[in-house]
Image (cartoon, rainbow, N blue to C red):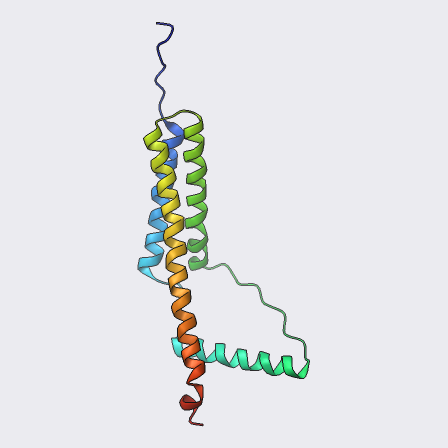
Length: 150
């Protein structure tokens, strides 16, 4: 009876799975629901970006200083974009702690996997969207002369 292993409840892994589910839901909701804050149209965004690039190049050629960057205010989109990966990181830490505390290995591995998937999904989707945006921006800049009628 001295060698009998004491059965404990896997609290840390269970909390990790709960937070992992929340992180994954936040990331999927933000990706699926789209921007929750009011957004400018694509034409306004591209036009302002191209005009800003032009003004910056003119200032650089004249030797004038560039304006100081402005701090972004916290919005619901920015909060959700930040909260998902942070919760995913917390889940990975909780899963690792559960593994170190010798809790159920399947639960610990599941928590680590869900946290990593939440972080990876957001990184993958934002990377794809950034590449698509850069391609669109370069296409617009390449065709700027024909767009403005020059």
